[in-house]
Structures are given as C-alpha cells and as structure tokens.
Image (cartoon, rainbow, N blue to C red):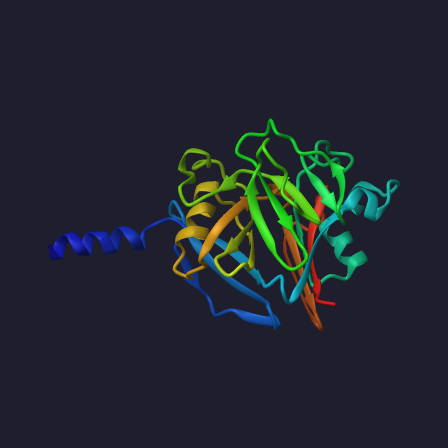
Length: 256
C-alpha cells in the first residue's frame, strides 16, 4: 500500500503542466493580477506569464485591428504593439487568427460592440468562442443550435475541456496563447515564452498546482502571433512576439 501511494505521488509530480512557482501573484490593480512561472512539457521547461482578471472590476474588450488601426497601415501596424499604443490598455494580447499573411482578415466569429465583423465558422472542428458581456466573460463551444449573447466575441480553437485528450496535439510545439474562465468567473490569459504542446497547455490549465480552478478554456492564435503587453504606471512588460500580424486582440482597461 505504501509503495503504491509513493508511485501515485511520483506520477502526479511528473505530470506535464505541473507549474513551478517563481514568486507569487502580483497585483497590478484591484481585480487584475499577473504570475510568472514555468511548467513541464514532456521534459522541457516552458516559461509563461499568466494574467488573472475579474471582469466585474475591469473592462474587457475585443479590438478589430483592421478597422481600428486603419486599412492603409503597413503590415507591422496590425500588431499587439500597435493596439497597445492606440488603446493604451493595461493588457493587450493576441486573439483570433487571420486568413492571410498580408491583411488581418478574421477567421470565424469576430464581434465588436455588438456588431458582427465576421460570421461564425460552423465548419471549424473543436472550435470555441470567447464571449464578453457587460461584466462577465464565458467560453463556449461553437454550436449551430444557438449563438451566444455577447457584446464582444472571437472564435478560435481548440475548445479545451478537462477531458480534451482526443482533440489536443501532444507533439507539435508552438508559442501559445490561451484563455480560461475559472469557477469564480475570472478570466485567465496564458502566454508562453517558449514553445509548448496543446496537451501541456490543457494539463497546466486544469491540473496545475497553482489551483487555477479552470472551468472552461480556449486556445487562441499562437506561434508568431503569440504576444502580450502589460503596462501600468511605469511598469511595462512585453511577452512573446508583439509585432506579428493579428486579426484581433483582447484588451483589458480600467473599469469606468
């Protein structure tokens, strides 16, 4: 019995997604925190930044880069960096992917301020929608039965659940951006500084020793587009590539 217990403990300690704390949550302002750490992905260490946001105390919104930044901008202007400069938001991170490498053309649903910029792609397998309301945020799978009631929304994938073993990639590594909603209704934004598999991202969000209490999660656009800026007061942090082409971005502002 004792040897079996020791073996179970060892298996848990080696589970991909197990986080190594490198400090503690740092409060940026009420209802907005950031944590820097790393987790294991099949024997490789993946460094990450994790933002936790209470939508009741902060304003969440989706930015349509094509219309917000201007149709005549150069390639590099449609980026997280440019969205950060224009909006002066505390946090800006890449959201949905683009259909071309020259202009930010949304793939799937993009909704801003209640207006549909791009329709839902119901043919995209295992996709989900990040749905932002007045003071709450949800993540739902794409369904032909009904569209979620959102003010801002973006479609991406895969939609991640605790049991998403069959839909996540356990071999391909890319820089990742993912979002999740915890049991308290807070939004988690994860950006990796190193390349990671979807499988490890899923394991980290649902099984991390940080106790994230994840209820639902969604993989956002990644790789060359994966990046985040955090700016509050004199503190400015850049994570990943913030100069890549993005069709949309997720921004967090102070509450009005």
